Image (cartoon, rainbow, N blue to C red; front, side):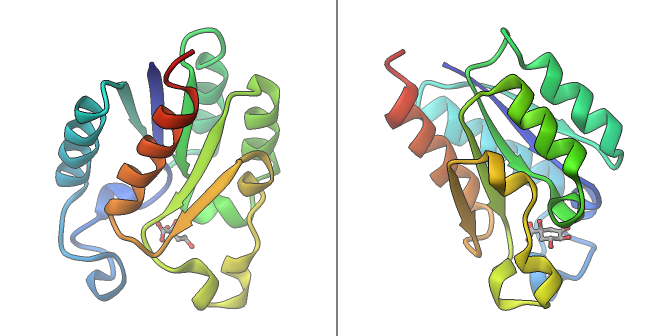
Amino acid sequence: MKILVINGPNLNMLGVREPEIYGTNSYASLCAFIEASAAAFGIECSLFQSNYEGAIVERIQQAYGAEDAIVINPAAYTHTSVAILDALKAVSLPAVEVHISAVDERESFRRVSYAGMACEKKIAGLGFEGYREALRYLAERYGGK
Ligand code: DQA
């Protein structure tokens, strides 16, 4: 099974940005964690990070016919981007929304998720572990296909 893992803006700054919220581990260590988790589930995973909304839209479009599912942390675009929501709906792939922090326990604007309207599951507040949970969920549910 092939899974695309997308990380949105400022997640390349993990380890530096607000460590009290996002932890002290870097984006590179997140990538290593996701790759090791995917390998353990027999998943072929492709990682993508961008600070640009349009680049994320284009990468989602490229997944059509090429990947089987998507794990996405749209970061701040979660709360603003109808374009990312529409791209997820356009490709119609099973998708899981992940957030490192507990978005529902923070500012009220973080409780709104546009991307989440096209995702079948949301995992928030588990740190890096949330990505592994998302991969496990997708592998168990769709891995046989
Ligand atoms: C985030 C939560 C978002 O509200 C925030 O804008 C981010 C990261 C998370 O992983 O907890 O950049 O998606």
